[in-house]
Image 1 (cartoon, rainbow, N blue to C red):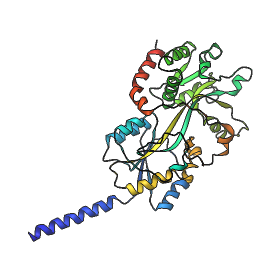
Image 2: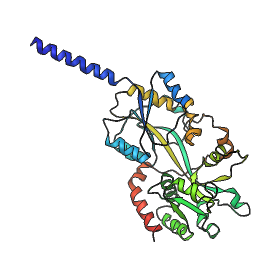
Image 3: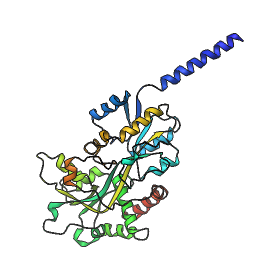
Image 4: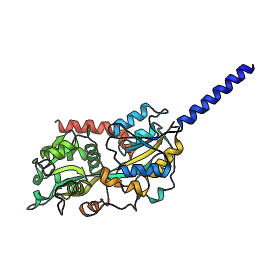
Length: 341
């Protein structure tokens, strides 16, 4: 009996030691391939907390969410960053997250879809908008609404992305559904098809292929982002005084990116520190020039290029994530039928 008691005690010590080891080491951030943070800011997290940050890229947002679902309860990361409006409902229904209410939520910009159960926290947002080449409309009228795009003046002018394969393409489709309604969006798309809309598999094909500014193509209007004009300035050599592109603010679809603590992590205290850090001024002011989206903090300073060369839409289009999840596949199938008619 004494040998059995000693054996059980030894096993308990081993289990405790293993648990302690598992609770040490870096905090792991599962994210999409577009995540980027400066080395200085990444080091700032370690300096503040004493914890290393390990970044685990996992494809696009949809692939990342699917991977998290497949490993639910035994996650390969401690925090997931980058689930956006279009996939949020799927992630919440899969019970991927441990609730956590950061004490920094009061600094957030209003209207970013704060989860009442605090399973996820808004970190940044981007607006998918129509962009146009200013030079192409010097002697003519640029579009002022989505409805303009089906008029003869813009025949052969627009390039969009396939919503089945492209995040901005899906966002633009959702915007048209919200703007024109369930009874009207199909006719709008039939109008675009009749107006010789071009459709590409992804954003790069559209922007750096067909668009007149990005790729020297022959289409002066493209589905892109509100942050594309400042990017045109930042990456130009030499830098122009004015962005060559402008944003049509009508029909911009707002995509919010969220972070949440993955259920089953053995690093929950460290994961909470990481959520708080993602809301810090240090991280938030690093966001625009690394990921070309806007910080969720209302008081975060924007780079001068973002202030001078773009706008944040005052009334962006939004849609309930649960509605998106319930109808996404049907809407895409209906869209495919229209463009293949």
